[in-house]
Length: 253
Image (cartoon, rainbow, N blue to C red; front, side):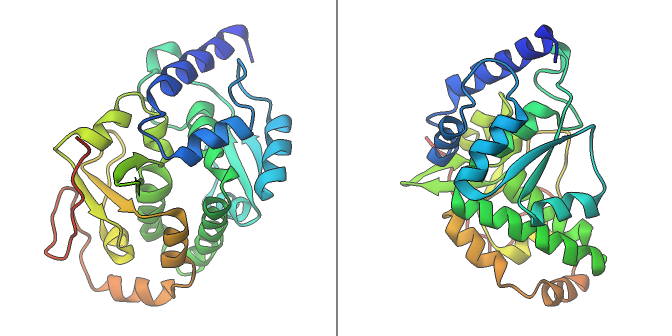
């Protein structure tokens, strides 16, 4: 990487760690420390993987860009996270369509040092491989979006961030927890799988889990083939749509 690319990482990193401690789940900040990610510049993948493997058996590999679903889920199932190797330009600090190394490494990797979350990610990889055989990748993508990318968690009575898409976003980090506009709905697997999402705006729906252990329990032993079958007869739910059974979680004050 060039000096300018390292400087872009440092700028993104500095402004996020200044605002995240009161907003993000403590396991995220703990992961940053365990993995030595506070050092200047884009992290060295060999060192990062070595530290991560000691914690949970995961490692990180860089790829040129987005990879096919089968390769992505195969890696997750084998406790290997694929991260894009390019970094955004300075005119894209607040938004880019394709995930870069800051989103992938800063946003995703710290929580892989948490055992329960690491197990969830591996289970998601295994579930992705099954979804391919069932032609249900589009459906499973809703679960990935609303947990891994844009999930919220209740921690000691307050909402906190854990999804990488929010953790790595300077603007959405605060919006997701405090703005009155979006719906914050208690996690329900079928509800999540039914709910559409948008990729180019702050979210209008968030789903709230109680813990990573609870998320793992609610997803790992589920017969997804049966769930997919049940949902096939139901319409997708639009963004911002409230259902009678939804349990809303109020924003932080």
